[in-house]
Image (cartoon, rainbow, N blue to C red; front, top):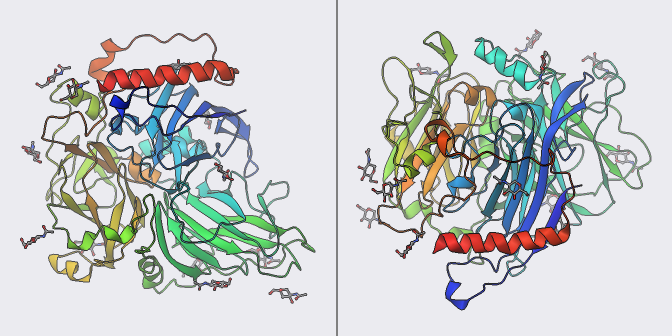
Length: 591
Ligand SMILES: *[C@@H]1O[C@H](CO)[C@@H](O)[C@H](O)[C@H]1NC(C)=O
Ligand SMILES: *[C@@H]1O[C@H](CO)[C@@H](O)[C@H](O)[C@H]1NC(C)=O
Ligand SMILES: *[C@@H]1O[C@H](CO)[C@@H](O)[C@H](O)[C@H]1NC(C)=O
Ligand SMILES: *[C@@H]1O[C@H](CO)[C@@H](O)[C@H](O)[C@H]1NC(C)=O
Ligand SMILES: *[C@@H]1O[C@H](CO)[C@@H](O)[C@H](O)[C@H]1NC(C)=O
Ligand SMILES: *[C@@H]1O[C@H](CO)[C@@H](O)[C@H](O)[C@H]1NC(C)=O
Ligand SMILES: *[C@@H]1O[C@H](CO)[C@@H](O)[C@H](O)[C@H]1NC(C)=O
Ligand SMILES: *[C@@H]1O[C@H](CO)[C@@H](O)[C@H](O)[C@H]1NC(C)=O
Ligand SMILES: *[C@@H]1O[C@H](CO)[C@@H](O)[C@H](O)[C@H]1NC(C)=O
Ligand SMILES: *[C@@H]1O[C@H](CO)[C@@H](O)[C@H](O)[C@H]1NC(C)=O
Ligand SMILES: *[C@@H]1O[C@H](CO)[C@@H](O)[C@H](O)[C@H]1NC(C)=O
Ligand SMILES: *[C@@H]1O[C@H](CO)[C@@H](O)[C@H](O)[C@H]1NC(C)=O
């Protein structure tokens, strides 16, 4: 079903070398995004599928590949797909969030085109608007290393992706209505693993007839298992009965290799583990993702269970699930686990030089922002969430487009470096980043629930986290040597997390809560990074197919729809012709 092709294009003229990245292969996908009916927890509902699949297809590419993803919006509401963790170097035009892109109207298609430049690792994509991720539409992104780059572990015998996430039987339109009405979402109805409900490990807790995920393995083999928390808002503890999880990578960075019996995976986070099938096959084994930091007696239903099935297994998994950490009264257990995740400074990643050759601990910070999360507040009669006292309101005209057309008054470049004192407000206030600066961001969580924060366009170094209020003295505790570089970090309630980020990627980039409820109610901001030098080398030009909306809506040309669906077969020949046309378009824009 999914159209998928490699095309290698050669530079037409040696004059183009340097500017032209066309020697890197192109990978094409055609995606039809539509609802399908599914009953992951027993109740029938509409879920968002890609080419009929839920979760969507895995984008499996290699460092520096050029991706061309043609997305057809066959939902009943506008759509954008964002590529969490893909850095879109010099190209925030393809980021798929409201600050950079106009939504793809219902029935329209839009073609994303970007290069996965200088990165490797495990990420995922999802629909970024309107709470749609709560209905699915997500899938994995695997960026493999180029053949010339050594990987710090042997070739695994298989590569398995697991999407874990809390799930509601209410659909995303009802969920966002609840939030707009000032309500909490309440306890989820369950946890899905790869779009499926729990294995019936307990006949009282799990009704009959639920389809569950089975992972088939061979005894003695070692698999790379990539786990993504794609849920709405619940932190999950991940574990596989009787099996060690050897952590090797998180969101594009190789980690120091350590075994865990279980790991807390927060909303938006991705990890790779190597798991060796070293147990006897007397039975199948449970794969568990259970709600964290909640009263588990009350939240038993919020548990995902899949099955690890050895080819020579002698029977079904039975008995109780492996234990979750019993740390209700030990708030440091999970934080210490997070702190134990370290960067492998001697491994190469996208490039052969060691990850640690970028000595982030020796770089002077140029910009410091304390971003403070507080419990939801009522502003102008609406329940909203704030960062540093400001609840983000998305303008009708994307920020990056407004800049391109010199529109003023769309946003203010005045986001405060320290939380505002006084009444919270709703506004479109963004961070003025310093190009080539080194920014320190302290996320301070004054709420009573854990949150995760994500930054588009970048990986940041997680250098510290602790309970209490961050002060300048907290810098003394920073890990200046092997803090892991990633794109999503957890911030514990009543605690802070500090990250450092090198602002070398021009564009307008989103920082947001990954917890959908918090994000939906206003907890996000953008960082604008402009190269003060007038050059067109540090940012790609606006793409030819840019959509226009808001104050620029008059520039939008109508779109013809001969067929309503991308699943109509495009012949290989047509596609091959399409590719050089694209290349020529790129060249003509660059010159
Ligand atoms: C969500 O459910 C409501 C009923 O609770 C229904 O009216 C609405 O059409 C559904 N939306 C989608 C996208 O399925
Ligand atoms: C990704 O593609 C490579 C070939 O380029 C293949 O060897 C690998 O098995 C694929 N991985 C997945 C998870 O499909
Ligand atoms: C929509 O798809 C068609 C056919 O693949 C393509 O030619 C066109 O450029 C796409 N439109 C946009 C805006 O990406
Ligand atoms: C199933 O769950 C119920 C409710 O938590 C519990 O009382 C019962 O002991 C469990 N049954 C088994 C076989 O573990
Ligand atoms: C991790 O556990 C496996 C057994 O499951 C063991 O063989 C391996 O040596 C351990 N690795 C480390 C780094 O502790
Ligand atoms: C297989 O392993 C399980 C769990 O470690 C153990 O309880 C069981 O006795 C073992 N069976 C055999 C035949 O070794
Ligand atoms: C969890 O909830 C149960 C049932 O309400 C209650 O009895 C128990 O004390 C709670 N546990 C904790 C640790 O709060
Ligand atoms: C950082 O600042 C200090 C003091 O201002 C200066 O001595 C040092 O050279 C700077 N380091 C770098 C890498 O710029
Ligand atoms: C925006 O302003 C710049 C600098 O003044 C100018 O070069 C550019 O042509 C303007 N763009 C538009 C679309 O007016
Ligand atoms: C934004 O920062 C740049 C330097 O990085 C500065 O030149 C500019 O004046 C700042 N703009 C505002 C509105 O503060
Ligand atoms: C929130 O901030 C207030 C004022 O600094 C402090 O007293 C309170 O303990 C904080 N609560 C949490 C959960 O961080
Ligand atoms: C890019 O910059 C070069 C050199 O400054 C200039 O000649 C060229 O016209 C620019 N191209 C575009 C599309 O602005």
